[in-house]
Each structure stands twice: as structure tokens, then as C-alpha cells.
Length: 196
Image (tube, rainbow, N blue to C red; front, side, top):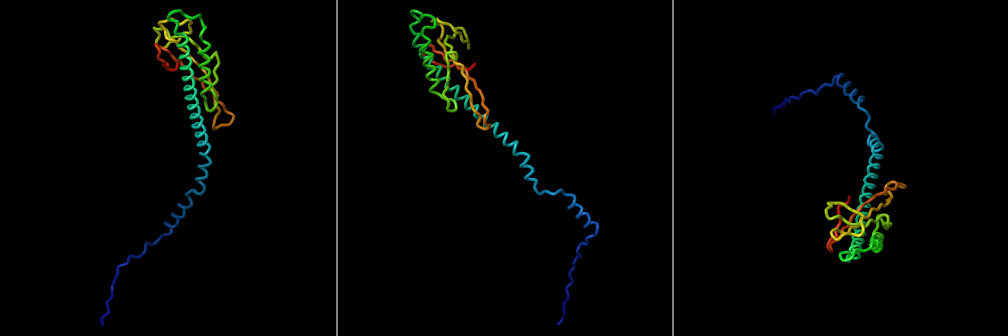
């Protein structure tokens, strides 16, 4: 039998020099320790996130409260102007005495406002919050407190009210919001003017 010898070409392993081992050790020493970095970021940014969350919650609360106040005032103004127009209808024949028919209209507007609420609190309006008058025929968006209302003008009611809303995110903080609505009666139709 003949013996076959195989020759393999093995490259010798790369010899590590002392300089290469030394530089790898220095690189490890130069890197800052990364343990606990997530905790540091959490401690730094958690207050920022909480403040932003409080601002978002309060802005949403104020937005919703203003919408509720405007809706309640719109209903009150329409109720008041309906009564105002019905009570003043005979003015085409004989104008009523000045401010004689305001009480039923004010009562209807006040009752309708009380039937609505802002964040669970009934809307409270006084007589000083309600102005009865007319829209002059040549006015674009004007409101005039006049009585008796002339036949060529539209009966109108303006209600301005405010409401206090408690912050949902910060205890003890209250916000005051205000809204204004003008409702008009023209030839048996009732509509709202854009908020001034």
C-alpha cells in the first residue's frame, strides 16, 4: 500500500500584535458607559410630556365648553326671537309702546338658556345679557337696540353670556369663556347671524 499524503495550504492565523491588542483595549475604555441612559431620558422628558398632556386636555375642555355655550345661547336666542316676533306681529298695524313686549321674550330666552348646560352647569343669563332690537334694513351685520321696531326692519335678539369652566388637568384652575349670538326674525323665518 502506498501512503498518500495530502498537503493543505493553511494560512497561519493572523498574529495579533501588541499594538492591535492595546488599541482595542483603549477603545473599550474610551466608550462612555451606557447603562441607565433610558432612565435619564425618562426623568428629563416625563415632565415635558405631562405638561403637554395637561395643555391638550385643557384646550379640549375649553373648546368643548365654548361650543356648548354657543349652542345653548343659539337656542335661547331663537326662542326669544320667536316670542319677540310673535308678540310684535301686530306692529304693522299699530306699533306697541316702547319696551312693552320684552318680558315674554326675555323669559323665553332665559328659560331656554337654563335648559342647556356647559360642562354640566346650567347656563344662567340675566336681563342685562339680553338685548332686544332690530336689524336695520340697510345694515349688513348691524344690530340696533330700538323700540318700537319699524315694519321695514327685522326683529332681533342679542345674547352675550359667559361661563366658568374648571380645568380638568390642573386642580383649582378655572377658565372663563364668553360667547355672543344674534338671532333674527324676518317674515316668519328665524336665523342666526355670524357671531360678532
